[in-house]
Image 1 (cartoon, rainbow, N blue to C red):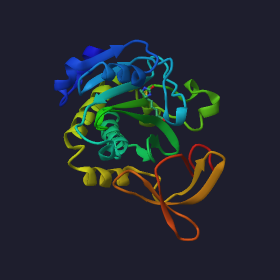
Image 2 (cartoon, rainbow, N blue to C red; image 1 turned 30 degrees about the horizontal axis):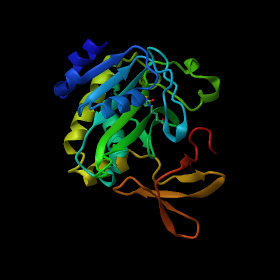
Image 3 (cartoon, rainbow, N blue to C red; image 1 turned 120 degrees about the vertical axis):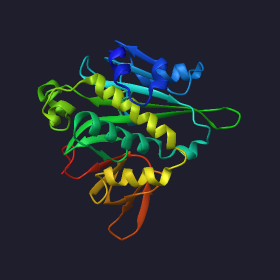
Image 4 (cartoon, rainbow, N blue to C red; image 1 turned 90 degrees about the horizontal axis):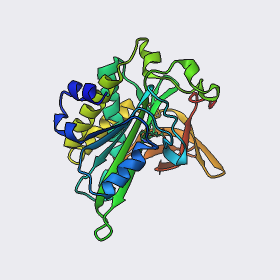
Length: 266
Ligand code: BTN
């Protein structure tokens, strides 16, 4: 698989020597953070055929069955402060839409902030984790993990999530070559990395056009509190701008946001 991925790279060949393949791992993000702390270089990429402890946002698990998806983490070492990377997850989201459009033949959307979706179903997600230098508080590393369902059929998903989850092959209606998807993801990450710190405004223009949450009625869940509003935009730092019924607007940067009509929320 590793060789098949390397063969299909068209842009990121400089990263081919730092591509690590695992048949089974607990979590590529957890292992990538360990490697980053041990000094692994910018552009180190971990891909697994299966994760036994795949992690998602908000402490959730990310089911990562064997031979079915791409489970990939990349170590980035941008020379900047953490505040300069507020748009990183969004930038990776747009890059993943580009990769899927190129390799699977359809363009997914993004449910703010980090879900890759098609129609009303989730195809995958992104988990970004930062490590800081203790003295300067600059970014030491960013680990960005991406999980994409590739080859599952509807009945491969647990009945409890069958209405909410889909794979690339279910949407494309043809078999998916995981090596081609992985190579497309790495090429798209390479392109994104070239302009991450210099083209924030245009990256976020592209994010706004891929983000299906904008214009939708949403609920914001934080602890036991639920608030309802309308998502009106996403700012250049990746915050969701929500308008409430009294007309005031707030930028939301954390918490769970449900979109009416998605994942069973009515
Ligand atoms: C989410 O949906 O909340 C984010 C899911 C991120 C899953 C990927 S799979 C590769 C990497 N390793 C992990 O443990 N998580 C990310």
